[in-house]
Length: 417
Image 1 (cartoon, rainbow, N blue to C red):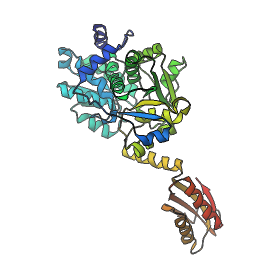
Image 2: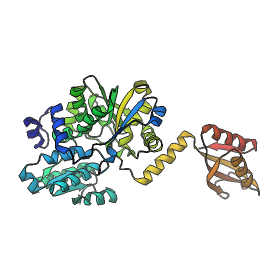
Image 3: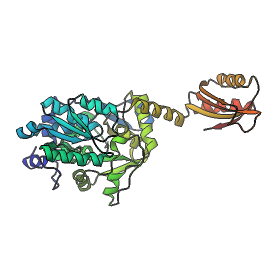
Image 4: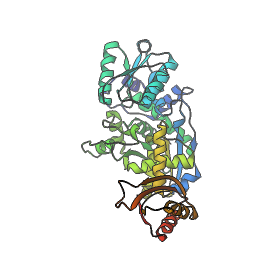
């Protein structure tokens, strides 16, 4: 790392806009070698058939803590002075940055305090504590947790490790780009998710020097397009639930913003449904478990064929820390969207043999009934009828249409929902 960048890394918050050079990223790569996994780059053919593009996946979900955040944390912590190591470090995070700082502080024998909002899931707290960090639960929002972390840093003389607004962290994240370029061969584009912007800024800076002319895109989810709004000179308006909580950021990093603006990087905004589809496609077709943020790059490829059809592109599965229940729900919702699960509503006559007849018709068409709800008393329009809801597993939408046709041939009124 250059002397200018090393000095800037020790200051927080960032007061100037230091540049991130390829030399800084290469120095970070040497610094973190052995402490961070050099993750594989794979090219699943099943993904290519679905996406209509050659898609290379950088599997940073295989890092020890399940996310790319280790790169920046390891580089920043390696630059601590002897005094800073003795005093300890502090960070604010509700997720992957927390575990990354905790792990690499533990490896270096440095005490770490992590401030997390009170709503943080217990599993994330336990995992962070598992790396010997002291966890402080404070505030209802990330902003309140961050303010408290800065207060503790000043009070106790701790070094604050920012998740993305730090040049050393950005340079560390940029090491992913070096690995992609070394392993990928010819590329038309690199597509990376954007939360605070550290990963995209570091990788874009490295690519700009190492392979000039290679297109780099950022990706945000439609409910949280903060970086796209900032780059367009618009006021930031974000909010709402999203499966991509790892990039659900209101306040992007000022240093990443300045770097991306100066490099002219375009940030794409993808629908929430595309992110869910990305998670499901990765799980089913690449056998890769991804959190929402990690699937954002693939979501961009799937939802923007105008940009990526027929191209050779690389993207990062930047994290795999998804709640199993959320993953299960996403997979089921995708089956519904694809027509591989039918949700059927029927108003049926309340007489013996009707359920058997419906089951026979579904089975004869090759469907598998996986759930039945039968309501006589309150939901049916008449006391002489009942409402039936079926969940039916099918091969594809064509088989689903055949099942509906078989039921309608029996004079049942079928509504899909």
